[in-house]
Image (tube, rainbow, N blue to C red):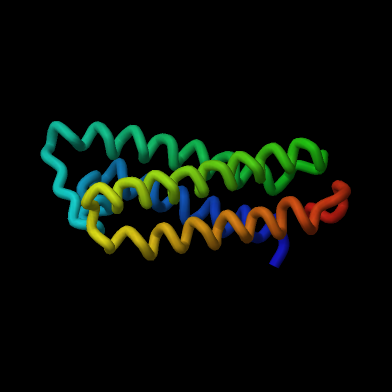
Length: 129
């Protein structure tokens, strides 16, 4: 595994999530027992477009050779996933289905992977490859 490969995998998965949130806005929320009315689809559209931007950041980050720039991208992704995990725990504590907990764990793992491959293992531009 390398940061470049991790960013590619992350970009593909995040792109897919963004597309699903826009095309089938109730699908992903339904996996944690959230039912959206048609008027609430707009929230999924907003999250979906954010996912598309994060996917772009992941794909574009694969070609960054400047280590400081790469670290900014990696820290952005770590913060995104860690903050999302914290919000999911908060929602769980306020009644959201325990079906959210695997996603919390997944986001923790993703954050750790980005920290390891994007921060610990990258000290100069050539290690980004």
